[in-house]
Image (cartoon, rainbow, N blue to C red):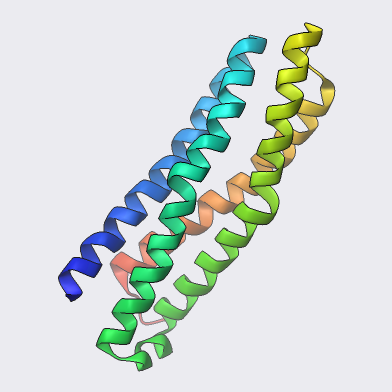
Length: 155
């Protein structure tokens, strides 16, 4: 059972981290193009990708991680690397659900309105800068978690 949970946990991490990195790539690419249709399409796709991949990824990571700790021994949470990883994942989830998803939905709406108006609303750029700031943090934290999970340092 532990091997199945570990496999699902690793799969969840791959899906989660892969999506957050590729989302930033495609948004930056669309924004640089200046093409209002590409920007609007990408903004819609970011919301869909987060609901399809990022959200399930976080859920799988939390569920399988908690289950593995429960199977192996709850005292594992006393291991600093594991406690820090858990806290960082919770912080990442909060940033995604409270900050990034609402910003993405706002950018989706603004970009659609911009297509209709024929010009990119400056509010999209402001929201995009906030998204980049929160997204940078929410990308860095899982990368730190990956290092902690692989190296298991005796912090």
